[in-house]
Length: 390
Image (cartoon, rainbow, N blue to C red; front, side, top):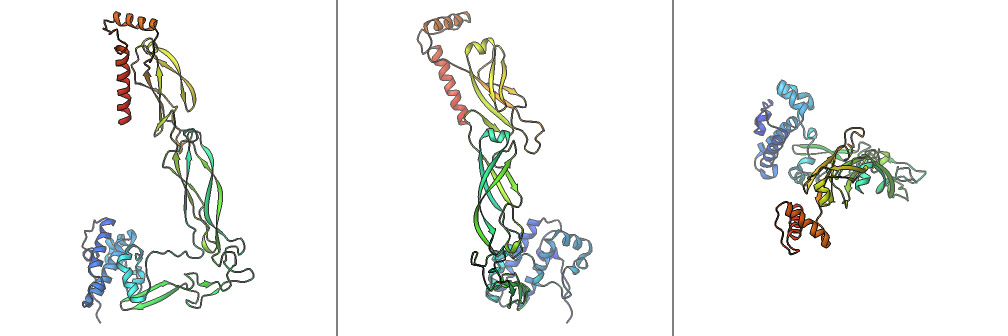
Protein backbone atom coordinates (compact mmCIF):
# COMPACT_ATOMS: atom_id res chain seq x y z
CA UNK A 1 0.00 0.00 0.00
CA UNK A 2 1.30 3.44 -0.84
CA UNK A 3 2.27 5.48 2.24
CA UNK A 4 0.07 8.48 2.95
CA UNK A 5 1.83 11.84 2.44
CA UNK A 6 2.58 13.55 5.73
CA UNK A 7 0.88 16.82 6.49
CA UNK A 8 2.58 19.86 7.94
CA UNK A 9 2.57 19.55 11.73
CA UNK A 10 1.57 23.18 12.25
CA UNK A 11 -1.39 22.74 9.89
CA UNK A 12 -2.37 19.53 11.64
CA UNK A 13 -2.69 21.38 14.96
CA UNK A 14 -3.96 24.59 13.35
CA UNK A 15 -1.29 26.90 14.81
CA UNK A 16 1.18 29.41 13.40
CA UNK A 17 4.86 28.53 13.13
CA UNK A 18 5.54 31.16 15.81
CA UNK A 19 3.08 29.63 18.30
CA UNK A 20 4.44 29.31 21.85
CA UNK A 21 4.38 26.15 23.96
CA UNK A 22 1.09 26.99 25.70
CA UNK A 23 -0.66 27.67 22.38
CA UNK A 24 0.58 24.39 20.90
CA UNK A 25 -0.58 22.47 23.95
CA UNK A 26 -4.03 24.10 23.90
CA UNK A 27 -4.41 23.38 20.20
CA UNK A 28 -3.45 19.74 20.67
CA UNK A 29 -5.96 19.24 23.48
CA UNK A 30 -8.75 20.71 21.35
CA UNK A 31 -7.90 18.57 18.31
CA UNK A 32 -7.44 15.40 20.36
CA UNK A 33 -10.82 15.87 22.03
CA UNK A 34 -12.50 16.40 18.63
CA UNK A 35 -10.91 13.26 17.13
CA UNK A 36 -11.21 11.08 20.23
CA UNK A 37 -12.08 7.51 19.08
CA UNK A 38 -14.95 7.28 21.59
CA UNK A 39 -16.51 10.38 20.02
CA UNK A 40 -16.08 9.07 16.48
CA UNK A 41 -16.97 5.36 16.64
CA UNK A 42 -18.15 5.26 13.01
CA UNK A 43 -15.29 7.23 11.49
CA UNK A 44 -12.31 5.01 10.77
CA UNK A 45 -10.26 7.97 9.54
CA UNK A 46 -10.61 9.61 12.97
CA UNK A 47 -8.23 7.01 14.44
CA UNK A 48 -5.52 7.94 11.94
CA UNK A 49 -6.13 11.66 12.45
CA UNK A 50 -6.05 11.20 16.22
CA UNK A 51 -2.67 9.54 15.87
CA UNK A 52 -1.52 12.26 13.47
CA UNK A 53 -2.20 15.09 15.94
CA UNK A 54 -0.37 13.03 18.59
CA UNK A 55 2.67 12.83 16.31
CA UNK A 56 2.49 16.56 15.57
CA UNK A 57 2.35 17.42 19.27
CA UNK A 58 5.18 15.02 20.11
CA UNK A 59 7.43 16.95 17.71
CA UNK A 60 6.27 20.53 18.30
CA UNK A 61 6.23 20.22 22.10
CA UNK A 62 9.90 19.20 22.13
CA UNK A 63 12.19 22.23 21.47
CA UNK A 64 14.95 20.10 19.93
CA UNK A 65 12.64 18.11 17.66
CA UNK A 66 10.76 21.25 16.70
CA UNK A 67 14.00 23.02 15.73
CA UNK A 68 15.01 20.10 13.50
CA UNK A 69 11.56 19.99 11.94
CA UNK A 70 11.59 23.76 11.28
CA UNK A 71 14.93 23.41 9.52
CA UNK A 72 14.67 20.12 7.67
CA UNK A 73 10.97 19.26 7.63
CA UNK A 74 9.84 15.65 8.17
CA UNK A 75 13.28 14.36 7.23
CA UNK A 76 14.69 16.13 10.26
CA UNK A 77 12.60 14.14 12.75
CA UNK A 78 12.15 10.76 11.11
CA UNK A 79 15.00 9.32 13.21
CA UNK A 80 13.05 10.27 16.33
CA UNK A 81 10.66 7.41 15.61
CA UNK A 82 11.22 3.80 14.64
CA UNK A 83 11.37 2.36 11.14
CA UNK A 84 7.59 2.10 11.09
CA UNK A 85 7.16 5.77 11.89
CA UNK A 86 5.42 7.28 14.88
CA UNK A 87 3.83 4.80 17.31
CA UNK A 88 1.98 5.54 20.53
CA UNK A 89 4.93 4.13 22.45
CA UNK A 90 6.83 7.22 21.17
CA UNK A 91 4.32 9.58 22.80
CA UNK A 92 5.63 11.03 26.08
CA UNK A 93 2.64 13.04 27.25
CA UNK A 94 0.04 10.55 28.48
CA UNK A 95 0.29 11.90 32.02
CA UNK A 96 -0.38 15.47 30.81
CA UNK A 97 -3.64 14.49 29.14
CA UNK A 98 -5.16 11.93 31.48
CA UNK A 99 -8.62 13.29 30.72
CA UNK A 100 -8.13 12.38 27.05
CA UNK A 101 -6.27 9.08 27.28
CA UNK A 102 -7.48 7.70 30.59
CA UNK A 103 -10.83 6.39 29.32
CA UNK A 104 -9.24 4.96 26.15
CA UNK A 105 -6.84 2.77 28.10
CA UNK A 106 -9.51 1.84 30.62
CA UNK A 107 -11.86 0.67 27.89
CA UNK A 108 -9.24 -0.95 25.65
CA UNK A 109 -6.87 -2.49 28.18
CA UNK A 110 -8.49 -2.26 31.59
CA UNK A 111 -5.60 -0.13 32.85
CA UNK A 112 -5.38 3.55 33.66
CA UNK A 113 -2.70 5.99 32.61
CA UNK A 114 -3.09 8.59 35.28
CA UNK A 115 0.05 9.83 36.78
CA UNK A 116 2.93 7.66 37.72
CA UNK A 117 2.10 7.27 41.38
CA UNK A 118 4.27 4.17 41.71
CA UNK A 119 7.85 4.64 42.81
CA UNK A 120 10.33 2.73 40.73
CA UNK A 121 12.97 0.74 42.67
CA UNK A 122 16.30 2.46 42.57
CA UNK A 123 14.56 5.77 41.91
CA UNK A 124 14.93 9.04 43.75
CA UNK A 125 13.07 9.59 47.01
CA UNK A 126 10.38 12.25 47.39
CA UNK A 127 11.21 15.85 48.21
CA UNK A 128 9.78 17.02 51.53
CA UNK A 129 8.76 20.40 52.92
CA UNK A 130 9.00 21.95 56.38
CA UNK A 131 8.88 25.44 57.88
CA UNK A 132 10.62 27.36 60.67
CA UNK A 133 9.43 30.47 62.52
CA UNK A 134 12.13 33.03 63.33
CA UNK A 135 12.32 36.21 65.33
CA UNK A 136 13.52 39.29 63.48
CA UNK A 137 16.74 39.15 65.50
CA UNK A 138 17.37 35.54 64.39
CA UNK A 139 16.73 36.47 60.77
CA UNK A 140 19.12 39.42 61.14
CA UNK A 141 22.05 37.48 62.58
CA UNK A 142 21.40 33.99 61.19
CA UNK A 143 20.78 30.98 63.36
CA UNK A 144 20.71 27.20 63.55
CA UNK A 145 17.33 25.52 63.93
CA UNK A 146 16.39 21.95 64.77
CA UNK A 147 13.64 20.64 62.49
CA UNK A 148 11.58 17.49 63.14
CA UNK A 149 10.78 15.69 59.88
CA UNK A 150 8.63 12.62 59.35
CA UNK A 151 10.11 10.70 56.41
CA UNK A 152 10.70 7.27 54.91
CA UNK A 153 14.05 5.76 55.90
CA UNK A 154 15.76 2.66 54.50
CA UNK A 155 14.79 -0.34 56.64
CA UNK A 156 17.66 -1.24 58.96
CA UNK A 157 16.75 -4.95 59.02
CA UNK A 158 16.80 -5.62 55.26
CA UNK A 159 18.98 -2.58 54.35
CA UNK A 160 16.35 -1.38 51.91
CA UNK A 161 16.02 -4.60 49.89
CA UNK A 162 12.59 -5.51 51.26
CA UNK A 163 13.69 -9.13 51.60
CA UNK A 164 13.72 -11.23 54.75
CA UNK A 165 17.36 -11.62 55.93
CA UNK A 166 18.94 -14.59 54.20
CA UNK A 167 16.71 -14.32 51.12
CA UNK A 168 16.86 -12.25 47.94
CA UNK A 169 14.62 -11.00 45.16
CA UNK A 170 13.75 -13.16 42.15
CA UNK A 171 12.96 -12.35 38.53
CA UNK A 172 9.33 -11.32 37.98
CA UNK A 173 7.60 -14.16 36.11
CA UNK A 174 5.05 -11.80 34.50
CA UNK A 175 7.43 -9.45 32.68
CA UNK A 176 10.50 -11.75 32.85
CA UNK A 177 12.58 -8.98 34.40
CA UNK A 178 11.73 -6.26 31.86
CA UNK A 179 9.59 -4.25 34.28
CA UNK A 180 7.11 -3.57 31.48
CA UNK A 181 4.55 -5.45 29.49
CA UNK A 182 3.43 -4.48 25.97
CA UNK A 183 -0.25 -4.29 25.20
CA UNK A 184 -1.66 -3.99 21.67
CA UNK A 185 -5.23 -3.16 20.74
CA UNK A 186 -6.42 -1.66 17.49
CA UNK A 187 -4.19 1.25 16.47
CA UNK A 188 -2.53 1.38 19.93
CA UNK A 189 0.59 -0.55 20.90
CA UNK A 190 2.07 0.58 24.17
CA UNK A 191 4.37 -0.58 26.93
CA UNK A 192 3.00 -0.18 30.44
CA UNK A 193 4.46 -0.83 33.87
CA UNK A 194 4.18 -4.42 35.03
CA UNK A 195 1.47 -4.61 37.68
CA UNK A 196 3.12 -7.47 39.53
CA UNK A 197 6.62 -6.06 40.10
CA UNK A 198 5.64 -2.39 39.64
CA UNK A 199 8.43 -1.86 37.17
CA UNK A 200 11.23 -3.39 39.26
CA UNK A 201 11.65 -6.50 37.13
CA UNK A 202 12.00 -8.42 40.39
CA UNK A 203 9.65 -9.52 43.14
CA UNK A 204 10.09 -10.19 46.85
CA UNK A 205 9.04 -13.75 47.63
CA UNK A 206 9.97 -13.58 51.36
CA UNK A 207 9.19 -10.07 52.65
CA UNK A 208 11.14 -8.49 55.49
CA UNK A 209 9.07 -8.68 58.71
CA UNK A 210 10.05 -5.12 59.69
CA UNK A 211 8.99 -3.25 56.54
CA UNK A 212 6.67 -5.89 54.98
CA UNK A 213 8.76 -5.91 51.82
CA UNK A 214 8.64 -2.16 51.22
CA UNK A 215 12.31 -1.65 52.00
CA UNK A 216 11.50 1.59 53.83
CA UNK A 217 9.91 2.51 57.17
CA UNK A 218 8.52 5.83 58.38
CA UNK A 219 10.48 7.59 61.11
CA UNK A 220 10.74 11.01 62.72
CA UNK A 221 14.23 12.47 62.47
CA UNK A 222 15.63 15.71 63.85
CA UNK A 223 17.81 17.76 61.52
CA UNK A 224 19.88 20.87 62.13
CA UNK A 225 19.40 23.59 59.53
CA UNK A 226 21.72 26.55 59.27
CA UNK A 227 19.67 29.67 58.49
CA UNK A 228 21.75 32.41 56.81
CA UNK A 229 21.56 36.01 58.00
CA UNK A 230 19.04 38.20 56.16
CA UNK A 231 16.38 35.63 55.24
CA UNK A 232 12.88 36.99 54.70
CA UNK A 233 9.31 35.75 54.97
CA UNK A 234 8.48 33.16 52.30
CA UNK A 235 12.07 32.33 51.35
CA UNK A 236 12.97 28.66 50.92
CA UNK A 237 16.16 26.84 51.87
CA UNK A 238 17.10 23.61 50.13
CA UNK A 239 18.73 20.89 52.24
CA UNK A 240 20.10 18.52 49.62
CA UNK A 241 19.69 14.82 50.37
CA UNK A 242 17.48 15.33 53.44
CA UNK A 243 14.21 14.20 51.83
CA UNK A 244 12.88 10.65 51.77
CA UNK A 245 15.15 7.69 51.07
CA UNK A 246 14.71 6.38 47.55
CA UNK A 247 13.03 2.98 47.00
CA UNK A 248 15.35 0.03 46.46
CA UNK A 249 18.36 1.93 47.74
CA UNK A 250 17.81 4.93 45.46
CA UNK A 251 19.18 8.32 46.39
CA UNK A 252 17.36 10.65 48.75
CA UNK A 253 15.15 13.53 47.79
CA UNK A 254 15.69 17.05 49.14
CA UNK A 255 14.12 18.95 52.01
CA UNK A 256 12.79 22.47 51.34
CA UNK A 257 12.46 24.69 54.42
CA UNK A 258 10.12 27.70 54.23
CA UNK A 259 10.91 30.76 56.36
CA UNK A 260 8.27 32.49 58.49
CA UNK A 261 8.96 35.62 60.54
CA UNK A 262 7.29 36.37 63.85
CA UNK A 263 5.84 39.85 64.37
CA UNK A 264 8.15 42.21 66.25
CA UNK A 265 6.96 44.54 68.99
CA UNK A 266 9.26 47.46 68.02
CA UNK A 267 10.43 46.97 64.44
CA UNK A 268 8.69 46.54 61.10
CA UNK A 269 10.57 45.00 58.17
CA UNK A 270 10.06 45.97 54.53
CA UNK A 271 12.44 44.01 52.34
CA UNK A 272 15.97 44.79 53.50
CA UNK A 273 14.91 47.94 55.40
CA UNK A 274 13.74 48.15 59.01
CA UNK A 275 11.39 50.80 60.43
CA UNK A 276 10.77 51.94 64.00
CA UNK A 277 9.08 54.83 65.79
CA UNK A 278 10.31 56.83 68.79
CA UNK A 279 8.61 59.61 70.79
CA UNK A 280 10.36 62.92 71.51
CA UNK A 281 9.30 65.91 73.57
CA UNK A 282 8.25 69.40 72.46
CA UNK A 283 11.52 70.88 73.64
CA UNK A 284 13.61 68.24 71.86
CA UNK A 285 11.74 68.85 68.60
CA UNK A 286 11.92 72.64 68.88
CA UNK A 287 15.48 73.04 70.19
CA UNK A 288 17.12 69.92 68.74
CA UNK A 289 18.78 67.05 70.60
CA UNK A 290 20.80 63.85 70.17
CA UNK A 291 18.97 60.68 71.22
CA UNK A 292 19.81 56.97 71.28
CA UNK A 293 17.86 54.75 68.93
CA UNK A 294 17.53 50.99 69.28
CA UNK A 295 18.45 49.12 66.08
CA UNK A 296 19.12 45.47 65.26
CA UNK A 297 22.83 46.29 65.43
CA UNK A 298 22.49 47.87 68.86
CA UNK A 299 22.01 51.42 70.08
CA UNK A 300 22.86 54.24 67.68
CA UNK A 301 22.98 58.03 68.27
CA UNK A 302 20.53 60.05 66.19
CA UNK A 303 20.75 63.84 65.88
CA UNK A 304 17.39 65.63 65.96
CA UNK A 305 17.74 69.03 64.25
CA UNK A 306 16.03 72.07 65.80
CA UNK A 307 12.53 72.58 64.44
CA UNK A 308 11.89 68.91 63.66
CA UNK A 309 8.24 68.23 62.88
CA UNK A 310 6.30 65.25 64.18
CA UNK A 311 6.47 62.14 61.97
CA UNK A 312 9.73 63.18 60.32
CA UNK A 313 11.59 60.13 58.98
CA UNK A 314 15.34 59.77 59.58
CA UNK A 315 17.63 57.21 57.92
CA UNK A 316 20.39 55.29 59.68
CA UNK A 317 22.38 53.83 56.79
CA UNK A 318 23.51 50.18 56.73
CA UNK A 319 21.62 49.26 59.90
CA UNK A 320 18.96 47.20 58.13
CA UNK A 321 18.99 43.54 57.09
CA UNK A 322 21.98 41.83 55.48
CA UNK A 323 21.73 40.19 52.05
CA UNK A 324 21.43 36.39 52.51
CA UNK A 325 22.97 35.81 49.09
CA UNK A 326 25.93 38.10 49.78
CA UNK A 327 26.81 38.24 53.50
CA UNK A 328 29.56 40.82 52.97
CA UNK A 329 27.50 42.92 50.57
CA UNK A 330 25.49 46.10 51.26
CA UNK A 331 22.85 46.03 53.98
CA UNK A 332 19.48 47.65 54.12
CA UNK A 333 18.83 50.82 56.14
CA UNK A 334 17.02 51.55 59.40
CA UNK A 335 14.38 54.30 59.25
CA UNK A 336 13.22 56.06 62.40
CA UNK A 337 10.03 58.10 62.54
CA UNK A 338 9.97 60.59 65.39
CA UNK A 339 6.64 61.47 66.95
CA UNK A 340 6.37 64.60 69.03
CA UNK A 341 4.89 63.45 72.31
CA UNK A 342 1.96 65.38 73.78
CA UNK A 343 1.93 65.07 77.58
CA UNK A 344 -1.39 64.06 79.09
CA UNK A 345 -0.88 65.89 82.39
CA UNK A 346 0.88 69.19 82.94
CA UNK A 347 1.72 71.07 86.13
CA UNK A 348 0.43 74.59 86.55
CA UNK A 349 3.94 75.93 85.96
CA UNK A 350 4.27 73.97 82.69
CA UNK A 351 0.93 75.30 81.50
CA UNK A 352 1.99 78.83 82.39
CA UNK A 353 5.23 78.52 80.43
CA UNK A 354 3.49 77.09 77.37
CA UNK A 355 0.92 79.89 77.43
CA UNK A 356 3.76 82.40 77.53
CA UNK A 357 5.36 80.65 74.59
CA UNK A 358 2.08 80.71 72.68
CA UNK A 359 1.62 84.40 73.42
CA UNK A 360 5.08 85.18 72.09
CA UNK A 361 4.09 83.41 68.88
CA UNK A 362 0.75 85.28 68.69
CA UNK A 363 -1.17 82.04 69.28
CA UNK A 364 -4.55 82.34 70.97
CA UNK A 365 -4.99 79.69 73.63
CA UNK A 366 -8.25 79.01 75.47
CA UNK A 367 -8.06 78.91 79.23
CA UNK A 368 -9.74 75.49 79.18
CA UNK A 369 -7.50 72.44 79.26
CA UNK A 370 -9.23 71.05 76.20
CA UNK A 371 -7.88 73.96 74.20
CA UNK A 372 -4.37 73.75 72.85
CA UNK A 373 -3.31 70.45 74.42
CA UNK A 374 -6.53 68.65 73.65
CA UNK A 375 -6.47 69.70 70.00
CA UNK A 376 -2.87 68.50 69.58
CA UNK A 377 -3.67 65.17 71.21
CA UNK A 378 -6.81 64.66 69.11
CA UNK A 379 -4.88 65.46 65.94
CA UNK A 380 -2.19 62.94 66.82
CA UNK A 381 -4.70 60.16 67.56
CA UNK A 382 -6.45 60.85 64.25
CA UNK A 383 -3.14 60.69 62.38
CA UNK A 384 -2.23 57.35 64.00
CA UNK A 385 -5.60 55.94 62.99
CA UNK A 386 -5.02 57.03 59.39
CA UNK A 387 -1.60 55.34 59.36
CA UNK A 388 -3.05 52.09 60.71
CA UNK A 389 -5.85 52.08 58.15
CA UNK A 390 -3.50 52.61 55.16
